[in-house]
Image (cartoon, one colour):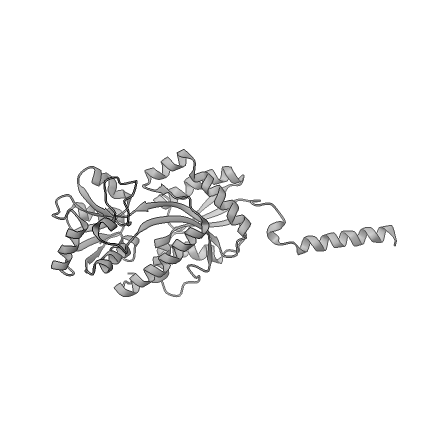
Length: 325
């Protein structure tokens, strides 16, 4: 065979082999900036958490991790943006499992499936929800609050940060478990809901870590966290199991997702980078300042939590007849 023809054939075969290789094998990961979508405006706790881990992961991975805020429609705008993105290995999504699940239950005709359109990268943090009353309230335990609700069906008021928000759904889940009915009073955000309780406009609220300074200052009283067991972030505050509520275990879980179809080796690398970032003492301290406890667990565990919350809150929304405004 002509030596020149042999060279051409070898070159053509090499080119064909290269074209046949999977796209993700053509270049090492990551080979360009990673986009991290946040479904809330800048400045909130999820946004701050995202920027905190993005900075550290960028150092670890050797590529910028750029936060892209896509707020609106109960997180569905951000979720839809990520679900529609190609599984190009360079798109991530940070969300709370309850927010993600409740949005799927509340909004009709979504362009994505809340489970099938995504795959897990890993847990970021967890933080407790707090069942709190005004310090002047007569109730000192969850059972006393439930007894009051039984004596006054539908009259014990509670404030939430909005119709269909996580505190609203959590309170309804508690009511369903206890066999009582509370009267929901929605406010436009966590701050106004806390202000309503501080002003004795409502009987109780389900709050996040924003209530802790008021509890420490003696203006509010924490009856319980809504997880089954106590939270290390609120020493001395009991979990629901000690109040006889055995089937409610609610925490605010924040984690990273990627578009479905993202290669497993890339997910493993991102998961490892995330956990290395969360292991940094400075990262732990900053997130603790937001009322969030780092929660480095497996990808499978985060996906199981997401699936469970999607199923659980779809049931709560349906049974309580919750509608968004």
